[in-house]
Amino acid sequence: MKYKVPFVNPQKQYKDHKKEFLKTVDDVFSSGDLILRSDLDVFERKIAKLVGTKYAVGVNSGTDALSLSMEAAGIKAGDEVITVSHTFMASISAIYHQGAKAVLIDVGEDFNMNPDLIEKAITSKTVAIEPVHLNGRMCDMAQIMAIAKKYKLMVIEDAAQALGAKFKTKEGKWKMAGSFGLAGCFSMYPFKILGAFGDAGIVTTNDREIARKARLLRYNGEDRKKRKFYSHGYTALLDNVQAGLLNVKLKYFPDWLKRRREIAELYKKGLENIKEVKLPHFPDPRFFDVYQNYALRARSRDKLAAYLNKKGVETIISWPIPNYKQPVMQPNNIFLPETEKICQEVISLPMFPELTNQQIGYVINFIKKFYA
Ligand SMILES: Cc1ncc(COP(=O)(O)O)c(C=O)c1O
Image 1 (cartoon, helix red, strand yellow):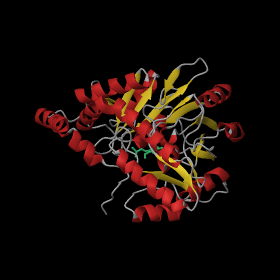
Image 2 (image 1 turned 90 degrees about the vertical axis):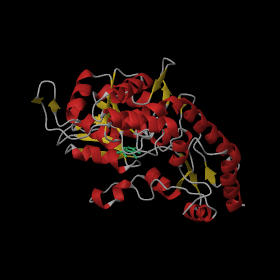
Image 3 (image 1 turned 90 degrees about the horizontal axis):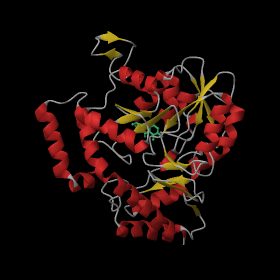
């Protein structure tokens, strides 16, 4: 179906910068620089600088970024990692891939880990906390880092949806998502804030050993210079051509973030008087949100989604079923009230930098009509 207002529009971004993308592809393909070449190197350096970490290691996906970070951190069978249920399943799967157990806790109003619930979830087996910065908003890293320090736990940030998001520390310094924990894990899946033309991801870290191990694991465990295998690894590299294309996109990234925040403000202005919806704006000056998604809570959510769909507006529901109710997570006796409520109410509106003011007005208009 062709939507009047699609949820995302990668073809528009391609059209806008087609020449640069095609030149990059031609350069890479003509030179045969397919694996571990300079475009990847440049991309890693640029991301490390942007996030403010010493190292960045390009990998095949956000899922790989999480799994490789956890493996590099030594998370193993018998360990427990505290995370949220309200996230993409990959955040949880990465823990199970290590043979460890994911201990799922509830989220707060802003869809993110409720830090007040962490201490109760800590056991003698807990080794790490995995906060998920959902929808381009960071978790309360002041509280999470303080708890991690108190109990000597590692923090592996799932920053898949949060490149560019910031949190202000007690000292009044802005710090980027992916720079707080032992590792930050980003996804460059095509529809992410910075999306490749296929799967891509990156690990950020200040820890030399984590970076070294992630580099080994992503390329079969081998140090190719020494011809020595140090671990049983994977084929999980970020392709050089994708890195090259991401380098092109990085030039526009600051403008795209600005536009996402502008769009969020326009949605806010248009929708804030509708009492049946709760918008994702939270008055805490410590947070700088980048709106990977504009996820709101709406009464009669399913009817609203069907109505908007009929009017040509594409929306997404992330997620209608709590992860702990999914078949792969059975059996368990988990019940998380805020997560349950969110799964019934959440709906994400179209959000991408190329969205026009006219399209935004169109969406607002029909949401108003629906509740009139
Ligand atoms: C919160 C979160 N974690 C992890 C991932 C996994 O990233 P990828 O799809 O690149 O494997 C995603 C991607 O959708 C995500 O949104």
